[in-house]
Amino acid sequence: MKEERKYIGGQKDLLDNKKSAVRKYRDLFIGDTSFLYFMKYELIITLFSNIPGALGFVLRKIFFKKLFKKIGQNVVFGRNMMIRHPQKIIIGDNVVFDDNSVIDAKGKDNKGITLGNNVLIGRGTTISCKGGNIDIGDFTNIGPSNTIISESKITIGAYVFTAGHLYMIAGGNHTFERKDIPIWKQPSISKGGIIIEDDVWIGASATILDGVKIRTGSIIGAATLVHRKMPAYSVAIGNPAQIIKKR
Image (cartoon, rainbow, N blue to C red):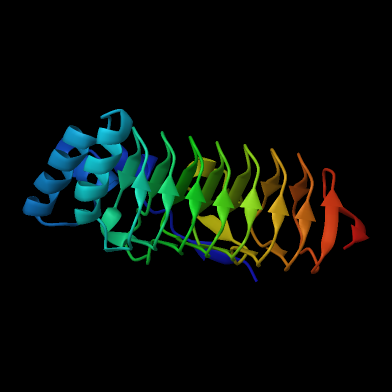
């Protein structure tokens, strides 16, 4: 069943002329927090985000952990990361964020982002909530330049690995029945989110659409568009995805 959702955050909030520029910035980057936390966030990000080399890794390891809701041991933060709404982000042990990655848990009533143990987030990858939730399991490797966006929910299991330039979105489809207002002002529709079970391999430049469930042990080929459920241990390629064999 399709679920109608109100748009949360983004362009509509940024264009709200009733909010000051500082209020818009706080809503976009840190959410509804105290002024003391706001100043701590600004200080830590400004001082330590772009320091190169081993010194940068050490300083970010010490100071970035003060921002998050919960964080495990031995977490590595790359250079020039974008971190938004960190008080709604939980990070397990031995997690590695490569340079230029984005981790964004924004939303008004959502739980945010949870990363398990031994997760790797590749260079230039964006993991972003737009009012939804994202959960990533243990030993999962999210490749470089991936884009993972949730307006509802995305659940990725353990031992999943993705190649570069994956695009995955849960929600993001607007209704368009009305002609008297622009499409972007109409509510978005959720088809139930995305579930990727354990031990799944997704090839480069694949696209995973809302409502998809990819079962355990499946392989999705490069440049494949997945628009429907994939049974366990299936191998699929093409646009749209076609199952070519079973493992």
